[in-house]
View 1 (cartoon, rainbow, N blue to C red):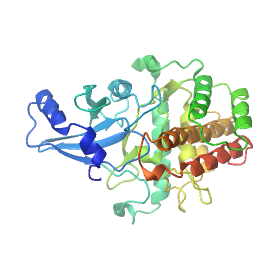
View 2 (tube, rainbow, N blue to C red):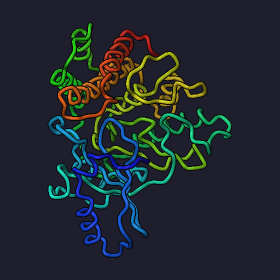
View 3 (cartoon, helix red, strand yellow):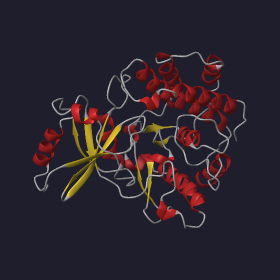
Length: 347
């Protein structure tokens, strides 16, 4: 947790939000307290506390953002459908687009209890045998569980349009990257052409989280084999489950990987390798992974495009955060990882 920044204090009407919540939930007691969760590269999250209630507030980042990105209303409505069938997704409480409260829309949701594993293993886990292996297996188990939800029985097909999903994703991220392009990176045009010309046939559709990674999960305070939450559902839809697997592995660093601007503890000894993660998913899901090199190449490219959008906003002054000043290095390295996956050099 962190204190509010100057921008948090000046651009968000916290007194107005307190009034909104006390009007909506009359049983709230005491004054509202706010802390900011450690900042990532995307949506902003805050812990809201009263004496007898707590929640998480999520909003888009400050400054100019890409069209249709950071859609809080969509995420709120997605959680209304997903939480009942996948309780690891938080329960949504309230959505608002009141511009007297802040410049962008926001929503509040259930707060989950546990550890988010980002840059270090929590102290309470240090003496647990095979902790890193257990965490690796928990990630795959949760992903397989999400992908096993029966769409027909749960009436979830309205969440997305699975037909043509992968083709739309590939085309869309290539367009987003080039709209925010700042530097020429050798080999990227050829990589883009390969991605467009080698889109495989997708397996049967499932719920797709679209940003499934270790630090978007929460683990029990005492038991790393128990996942207590999965977050960041903004991009969730119905589509190709192997895009989720590819995304998880594109964030899953290994020893010797170059700097990418993406935090991951998984390069430490004891975590499963990408190959081991793939084998476990294949065994538990029963899905054919013969085209996984494409999904990995696409996922590394997509991560580069996500960082490129942030770097573009930093470079034009829309956001002011020195953490973003050298993202161009990570973007170039992610493009190299995409090329390695294309050439079957990663798994």
